[in-house]
Image (cartoon, rainbow, N blue to C red; front, side):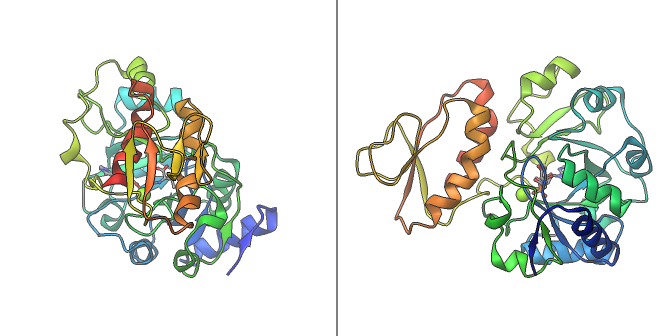
Length: 306
Ligand code: TXA
Ligand code: MG
């Protein structure tokens, strides 16, 4: 198996592998995914095996055009149409009532399907060359950190893939925002992400309040996205402590991340991945601000903390 540069030939190789029912490593603007043709039940099932993911946790279907969306859904409420117009292609996943074309294996037998149109040019080229919608969960083993660069995919994941197409570092670095629009009267954010709650509220108006939607997303676990090393948030790090700081580092194993949520989010997973390789007893994270723009970063820090 190999990590391949995103040449035309390699994109065609990945598309052919997908059409044969194999899995590939897919770069997106959020995190790397494990792609399969979404209508191929056995390929979808092998995605769950490779991740060690419980079957009750549904997958996101990735498309490159609106004409690929329509056959997958029973209806598209106006709220969802407006969100698509505002944020697609991009890091927003929209949950809609599903059509019979979408296998139960993808949706964990829910009557809804999660759809996202990525804006990463390589992801789009692979979907177009395959000419099929692709299911793609993040390319991590269940509960571990999502990879934001090709070389951070775990060897046991890579072993199950026909190839990984290297699309470089993911620009957002946190998973997409997931919004449930299957109830046309009330959208609800199920997972905070790159597109903020404020940006979404500007388009759809009222949203269900944060904290009231946990039960609607089967994939929401308190611990998730974790390094193997235990992680704890603190007000500030002492000189010999290891982890992530916002100001200038004062120790050998301190890594400074930008004091803005977009720059911080882009580097969080790769930084945790690097710290996780050092054999530390604990990773300390200096608490970032708690203002609303930091919601997605805080969600991932809490889930890494368990
Ligand atoms: O940024 C992303 O979204 C990445 C890249 C690869 O596109 N994908 C990703 O997939 O994060 P995954 O499988 O790791 O997370 C999908 C989330 C899960 O929390 C799952 O429960 C939720 O989306 N989800 C999927 N379908 C759903 C549905 N029908 N109803 C509610 N939640 C759903
Ligand atoms: Mg994931």
